[in-house]
Image (tube, rainbow over all chains, first blue to last red; front, side, top):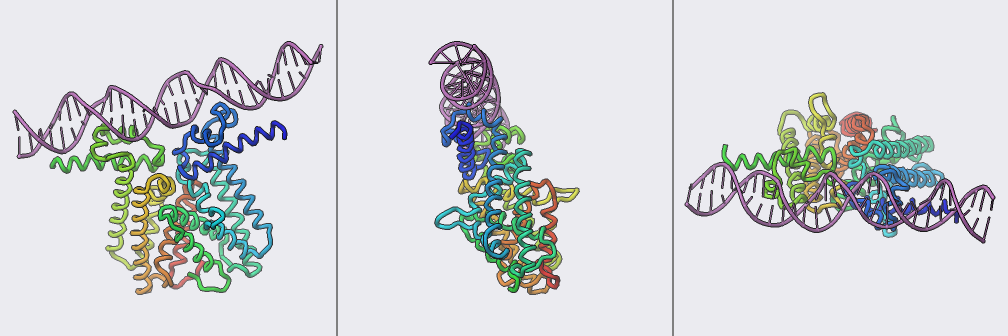
Amino acid sequence: MTDAKKSDQTRQRILDSGRALVLQHGFSGVGLARILAESGVPKGSFYYYFASKEAFGTAMLADYVEGYLNRVDALIAGPGDAGAKLENFWDAWLSHSTAPGIASACLVVKLGSEIADLSDPMRETLDRGVDALVTRLASLLREGAKEGSVRPFIDPDATARMLYAKWLGAAVLAKLAQSDAPLRMARAETTSQLSPTGDQF
Amino acid sequence: MTDAKKSDQTRQRILDSGRALVLQHGFSGVGLARILAESGVPKGSFYYYFASKEAFGTAMLADYVEGYLNRVDALIAGPGDAGAKLENFWDAWLSHSTAPGIASACLVVKLGSEIADLSDPMRETLDRGVDALVTRLASLLREGAKEGSVRPFIDPDATARMLYAKWLGAAVLAKLAQSDAPLRMARAETTSQLSPTGDQF
DNA sequence: ACGTATTATTAGACCGGTCGTCTAGTGCAC
DNA sequence: GTGCACTAGACGACCGGTCTAATAATACGT
């Protein structure tokens, strides 16, 4: 392994530690000292990789968005019709015994409101990530309508964004209630809403 | 004016200043010094009224929830059928030239995710407030179904909570995009969803 | 192989800000 | 005059983000 790769690994360790901590404490609630203690990297190194805490935050969000979209793209490229892929996507929001769900690991859920007024670079990074995700959901809605696995919508783009808004909101309510109930309600309502043949809710 | 009233006014001024500041900077992003500078109250007084910053946060959220529910109750007690009242409620989320909308003045939107992991008293206060609001929305859905101004739902409680989740999520997306578009989409979709006679989306 | 220059990385000082506590002081009601 | 409510703000300990001098590692020329 070359030194360049080793350097990348150090930087990635800071990003990963930072993500885990901000998911618990928010962005302003976590200091650099904490992140560096968790990642085992000295402060001088931090400022070698990141110009500032804000630059670090922007990189952390970009890293998160890239990983998220890669997983969504893998889901889309996989087997199954569009309806089944959408079902799998919503399922991923709920926690399972083996892994946390998107709802508890999502940086849009945890940091969206906090950083929207704190940092334009961070806000724009999350906004672009949301746009990219919503575009993919809209494509799945169109594809599903064509092949009959999802009911057709007049405006799949708006519907996709409102579906994402609902799940985002349900995730916040789940955090406030310390309960999966809002996510399960979102799951049931979304299934009903997208069903090609069933009752609308 | 009695001293008791004057004392209440001082306490209220701290709460109001605090609210304005956390709406911009989040809870962890605002220090006591800033709140006290804005409210013109010395630190000794702060700790006379509030046992801690967390106790202050809990009181601020309780104060917000109380005011919010009072306005919702006034809306409910006013003229018009349930459908019209719901329309007015959703309209209040969007900003107008004369006032900010709920979306930009809502402490659930701004602080929900941040404080959910930070403070149980604050989390419970918001959670109870959300429950109280959702209960009222569900009542309006039931009343509207009865009088024919809202389409009937199989589960008005779940529908009310999911409607709130959608608007909460749309408000976060609006902050990230720095655009009203998500709120206007939520408005259009909600109108369609609740319409007693129109197409579902 | 060695010396030098350059680049990568680190240590931790610095200064401003944080929250909470404490105590002396002030104003007002009785 | 006394007691209570409220105030002023110093203080201490700790935390925050940033910066710079120093050190370590690497590349290159001889």
